[in-house]
Image (cartoon, rainbow, N blue to C red; front, side):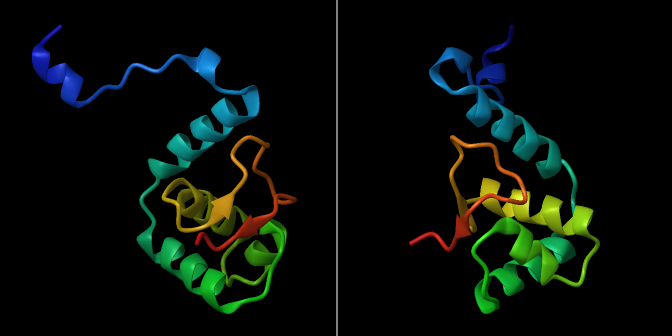
Length: 100
């Protein structure tokens, strides 16, 4: 294995994380492969200007299809723009917030 591989990979022991946390990481990695900056911007603007408590309420206030809004929200959670409890399964019923 070449030394340069260390620049692209990180060794992770999955035993250190709960199953929900690992599932959330997997989902966030999957949606991060989808390049949709316009969708991310729309959800980010709604996140800062709308009232919501659950992710479902935020997704419902965005003029995108629910699937696209959900994926954009998950990408924003992965980047730390939207806060969520990563130790609980992140779904439409998850409590979300603006990080401090």
